[in-house]
Length: 558
Ligand code: ARG
Image (cartoon, rainbow, N blue to C red; front, top):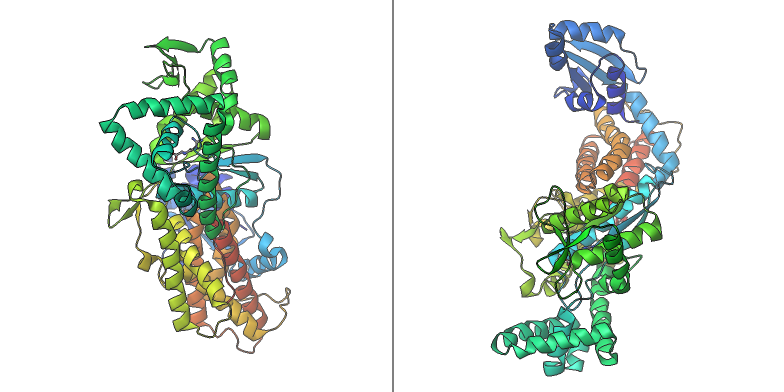
């Protein structure tokens, strides 16, 4: 039960403020003796020109809700006290019945393509692509829990004039064995070398253009090389995805839309939206200073031309309820234009398209640069994280079975959790030692708390009876109250496309559970043993599920 929502609903019946406004006003009294929620009447007093304390007592007389043990006016506040024992037993019963389905909304809410990760072939995957991968993966899981069908699309950057340059470079300096051994490092090296050499010898640019033209025309050699570059790059990306535990439903990248752009251009023309501007074909937009550039003066297409074709394709293919794009903040202008052009074409579903931007990862406050080859960086980060995790496991639990596997779950989980615990748009600093700690606001701390709960249940080794669930202490109530909030937390994470809501929640629940553990003798043989074990089990279910929604494993022992 969402008690805060109950407070909102109850108050909404007697005051004429909008529900969002009421919700925003509700406070949590610092002193728990004063109740669990408080509604201040100052805002109403202003409107009605009355004394706040008078309003509070007048309104309180009209309020009824059985879910609260008490609703009382205290000065200018209306205080709501939850019936603690009832909350604990109702919540535990629900979680024990639903298990890992707790918080699911099983309504069929429709398809949601999520454009995520989308690295560029023959280039190192940047930290931005990593963030897109991890954020997109979590949002997909949250959507699924809410009742949508997510479709994870890796819109690979696998086409464009740069492939003409890359073919030229490969033919001049390439080595097949080297590419096979370490594809991205070597391909990227040729590409960089091309640019260096082209500055001295501009004829190289012509050659690059010529090879791109051949590729466009389907020349066998050009196509074969392009396909090979794509394949070996993808193999390398897949290694990283495997480490992270991320899969995709589609790898339809930019190239897939090569033959799907002409119809879009035709449609724009037929709808009288295209006009010439300095030789190029553009669409004028209302509240944007820059028109959208659809075709360059030489007739070639642009990034937005492909994205228009992709958006139309996705609408047709998936008939989506929403269409999401997890891509860096610097692309905001692009997605704004994309939506506006679709709107001008008469597609009101452009309103269902959401760009989900995110901030940068820094190291010691400095931006990380792709040029230095972050693919190496990322590989090493995950390896080092696993190593650090293993060291701590060796110290804490040297006899643990399958140590390597757990170290992998903890190390990789730590990196993912660290990314997701920060609000999406915030920049954050990355320091591996901070990330893999077992204490503090880290993924391993949540995993460790869950493993502790599991170990208590193993020690008790009894079946839990779902009819004896009454607990009256404040420590238990604090834990159960958070557990009761879980469905509302998922909803909030969904509405804001914000996995950090779940990460922060799991940290708070862990802290409360550890306080409970420190203050209550859980395994004591008395009448409340069953209810305490139920609380431990419910905590573990919700922590495991929270971690799963973030894309992090929850080992039962560590
Ligand atoms: N490949 C692009 C990049 O690395 C990201 C693609 C984002 N998705 C899209 N549909 N435009 O910047």
